[in-house]
Amino acid sequence: MEFSQSDNNNLPLTKFESMLKTNHVLFFDSEEFENIIHHYLNQGKIALAKKAIKLGLAQHPTSINLRLFKVEIHVFENNLDEADKLLNDLYLIEPHNEEIFIQKANILSKKDNHIKAIEVLKHTLDLTDDLVDIYSLIGMEYLFIDEFENAKTYFKKCLEEDIDDYSALYNVIYCFDYLEQNQAATDYLNTFLDKNPYCEVAWHQLGKQYVTLELYKKALAAFDFAIISDDTFVGAYLERGKVLEKLGEYLQAIESYNLTLRLDDPTAFALLRIGHCYEKLGNLDVAVQYYYKTVEEDPQLDKGWIAITRFYKKEKNYQKALYYINKAINIDSENVHYWKLYSQINQRLNHFEEAERGYKKTLELGNFEIDTWIARGDLLLKLGEPEAALFNFEQALEFFPENAEIEYRLAGLNFTLNQNTKGLFYLKNGLRNNRDYSFIIDELFPDFANSDQVKTLLKTTS
Image (tube, rainbow, N blue to C red):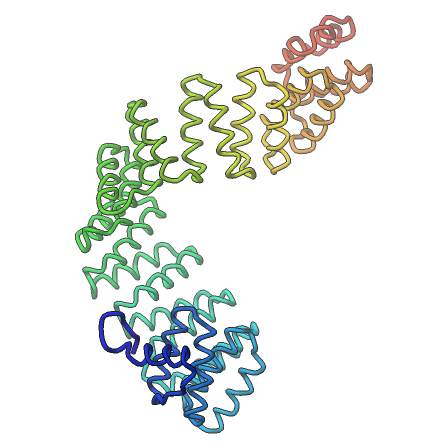
């Protein structure tokens, strides 16, 4: 029994707290102590719970339940050996007490001995009438050791005992998802819904499985049924909006997202999606208004700043785009796509040093796309750093061997640095791999394009 603020059940709690203030020891029966301790544990008031346990055991030294609370405190404070010792003593007194075995399994789990914990919990099944909690604990232990099939089995058992155990339902679907058994998940959910046709959570999960399988019409129907089951289910409206977007039904998607704004506090996600829908419909002025509403609602949502950045980039307002891409990078400085966008915008503004820095950061973060290497190398050449450009393209060639675009650049750079033998080597390779890109020499290295040696080579290989 938990204490509430609105009835007389909290009288023992008031009496207990009054006792602590006056230091006058009052008597409580063991059940009252149990309720007081339970209340403090739920409130996270561990120090008060420990005081109640100490006083409770002073008045009721033989109470198994109070001693089990002491075990719980030991486990919470990671005094696992103390907890284990106390449990062993309790086992000698009450060898069939299910709570002793549950706590024993908890200790084993904290020691990462999950297999043994599962054995103890399975033994507990013979001692308890509350099978659901034990099935759930077994399922969680199997999750800890990545045995998803076994975990799934026990979470299903939870639902067989209690069809309204939504936590177990989520865990079953988590297992299906991890195992990439999306079709099996839809089969299970459809069977579950035959027994519980108004379960909005199951319809919602079924819709998400259909989305994964790219069965968008079926997904839409599932989300509609979730809403029929609970017309205040915000998550179903959001998922419905996402599916409508995929189907190109942007006005209906906007309607679905707007319903979430009316049902609950505005979410940055819904505002952002509405903005995207308006942009798809070509209503750019309204779109950008929603992007601004997104970042007002959640200034830490980098996707909102990126949406504004892309909007101004399309509008060729690169100065504003640069301002907003910097905001996104300040939130997520490890996102390669943001750095690449940063470089492209700076390049448009002729901020070549900043653009090169952005491409360098993009490469450092593991984005080794060929256009990143080429853009950075060309910028280094423009900035008068041929040695750095040469090193950049030599690295690029390791990722893209026999790539003519890189080889022509290496040829020109080697000529620039008076390494003519290497220059001829790369030029010949470039001509052999793809002659169509030979214009790179003309565009980036015109001085060498007109040299007799290069002209002769181009003629003899034509």
